[in-house]
Length: 539
Image 1 (cartoon, rainbow, N blue to C red):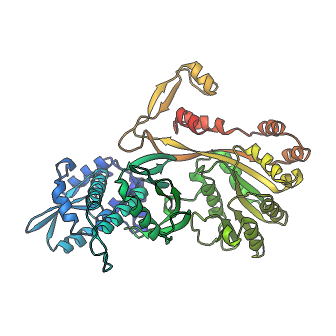
Image 2 (image 1 turned 60 degrees about the vertical axis):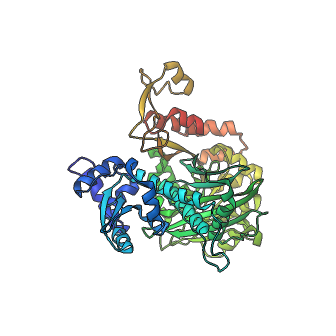
Image 3 (image 1 turned 180 degrees about the vertical axis):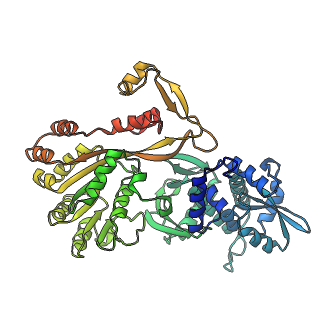
């Protein structure tokens, strides 16, 4: 692949090392990380393994569907190996990864030899999903069999397979949330990918109850309770032995229970501050604040802006056997080995303030509070800093300077804010332009002026815009952070203690090098990382 120019040598070496560490095949790792466009990878594998390249449009769906009835759909879904047809001597399989060891297992189950056709991964995944979904829609019209003696019915098997396929697609597509939504005459399933919701399936409306029940069983919830919201968690093992974690929330709506799953998969995050999107000077500010022996670091922004991951990268950098780190979270989103994580449970009386008091009796060096919501929690956090601890937490505010007002409105004195808080980071997440299809567009200089780009823009006014291709969604692929970092310097602390207003604080901070979110966002536009339309959507 290096010789063909499909991979750089250093990328190939790193991929080989990572695949071995994660106990994956090399080809499987290339597919998962999308290091080579799927069609080029399939072409290369077809040549290298001397196997025919599959044209998915020529597949007999009827023959494939008959074979699916003889094999566990979960095996097909997890392995992404699809039986296409069988004769007396051979089973024809479509594979995206010819080195997948499950190929032999499937051949053994059918008790015949196998012949392999290489398929483009995305086309194969879509074909498998279509077949599993089609089987589900067909079975929905059949009466249940075997319910009386406790055996699983065809309906139940199909619902299980369909739910499993949805979860797999969400993980493979790097979705953050899955929405199962019932309506009067329809049913909708949507993924949130890179912060945007997309509809991915519309099964028959009469399946809503069974889909909700299946998800509730997986999450250990009460399937008989349909009048009240419930919360739970699903943990499953993927085909490559990784633990996949889903937080489950049910909500009774007019036409049935809506179920939302949030995906928490620690393998998707490197948990390194350098990977978050900080500009160089901002990264240095964050790392310096983490090194201080005491002080409070506050991460702010709306829901879904990536605050928790920023906190986790900080904790991960501080995690060392010589320090005691404890967190209070609602709920913990990732499991961090070496860090004592406590889940808030307001129903049992374990609030943030109660948890924080308890953690302070556990000889901590560093504390992380998932969110400061009230005066009591804020006061305890401030006292923890004043007694020599490092504290990290979040607030729901729109900007760094607004956070100072928010703490004051909670009831914290300006003196305590000035002496306890060392750094405030406000952040947003924006989608990154797809590197394969982004295209330059020319904007009139007046348009650049209107957007605040005049001082940075070149005379020709060229900026990248989203287009869209088979490797991305609408011209975007992945997200990056945009930040503003407000360091509470001695001068700023003095002004704050003197009851200065937000405008005065912002003016002094700007003199000391502070820049607003939009300024940093425009830098990413000029660098070709994101588009003007995207930052205008988010900020």
